[in-house]
Image 1 (cartoon, rainbow, N blue to C red):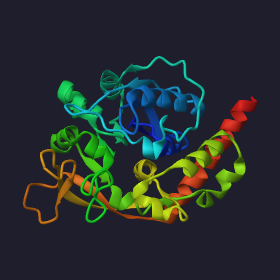
Image 2 (image 1 turned 90 degrees about the horizontal axis):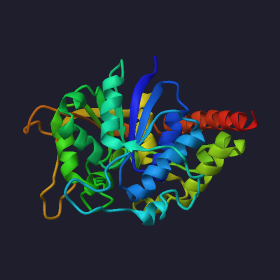
Image 3 (image 1 turned 135 degrees about the horizontal axis):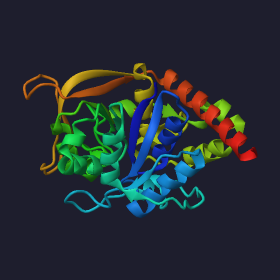
Image 4 (image 1 turned 90 degrees about the vertical axis):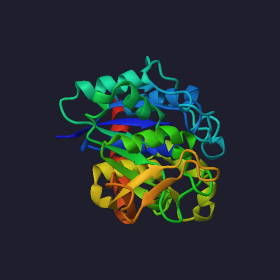
Length: 317
């Protein structure tokens, strides 16, 4: 039986690849997609999520979530994702009605007959709001798989100590890590290993359908300054690695550790602080360290090629 998931996202180039991978994978059932402000503003991320759902033929609802962090001013990354979030790639505007994001999260979790995995690949504002406004519902979440944070040297791309998704709303992230729901953290130390370029997706690039065209553009326009030196070997696929870890847990190796989020530091706001010594409390997070890169690339290539074939067949029907 497919695992029910909700994708909380700020599309976003790498978010788009993650959503495509989810749509292509029989291991999961996408109950809904909820947008949050992050890579670009909510006025872009929510329509982007809806347009992606249309492209992929997803029948799930799409929600418009938080337009700003809990208490801080918004921070965006157009230098990485372009002004429209997709590096200038334009999808047809969706006519879907966007539901309020946090109530949609709550409804989908409550209505699911099976425990839900939330794949959180943007700032954690929506998830923290769910925990505040619907705590009983939030405790029904089976696991939250987070693309965010980092360990060891690869801790920051927004600042030297903070990864972007956590940095945007560190107060929300601190609430999520402290809440008590099982968490898997796929941070920069893992995603910087998951380098993917068009050369690693040969079957997809040869297929020439709508997914292939979009992925080729996204990979070519992704300007991740933190990984600029790796452009010839591929760019870090942050969000799709987190999604892949849901589909095939063997793609990553983890350690069970205590993680907190610094939200008051002068230079360390947004830092995911990991207790390797076991002195601050019981472990609350499975932290990703190792990545089977070839297995990850093969999964992307196979699944996205199959997806493209379905989209082409659907367009010709």
